[in-house]
Length: 245
Image (cartoon, rainbow, N blue to C red; front, top):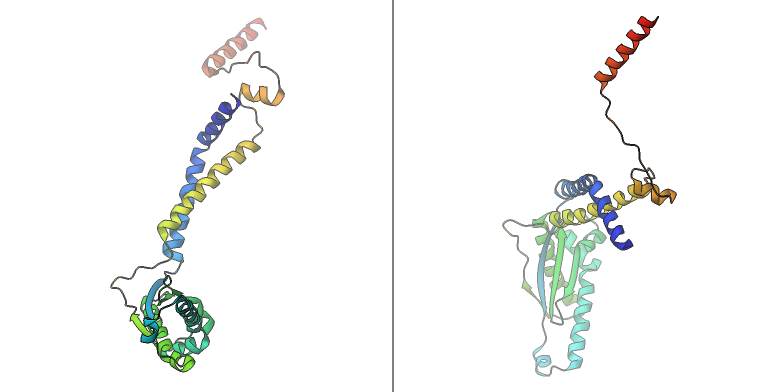
């Protein structure tokens, strides 16, 4: 029984503060939309793929040891691709004005599953520059790995290309607005319950019973005053006083 009453009170609280909850939710969605569309800088993504080849003799005797060696080799390549020995040359050849650390932060390198394919992904506010950086990292690495490790087993599997109408990968306005909707709704509901909790005014008979612990045995109804009738009665009273005097 108590649980039913509590749920009813919760519903009544939400119903009473519904306008405030809706305003907070709408405001949160609007702010998220404005920030996503007008404030945050769009970031574009471009990727290229490298293939780490095996020698013919290795392909003929492909053992578990070979698999482990290839994975370790690819992991080594992934680390080398983000070192200054590669990125400094990318910066020089593209004429970039950013630091090696900043360029490093734009690039991610990962192996695709346990295959010999390595993907280089670049994020940049300029979609064309993202394509150039991805392709340049691939070509510089393919060229420099020969001198670094004395091997020539890297080939470019697919180059990054600039799409006709590139779409930014972030920010995601729809996702941000959806998150803002949920957060705004939670804040609105939470604020509604907080205001209800802090409101100690007594408005109903039930409030009296809850706060004072006594039963209500009667109430004084409120009446709307008829101002015209009151004015007439006052006029008659004054006339009577004048006649009596």
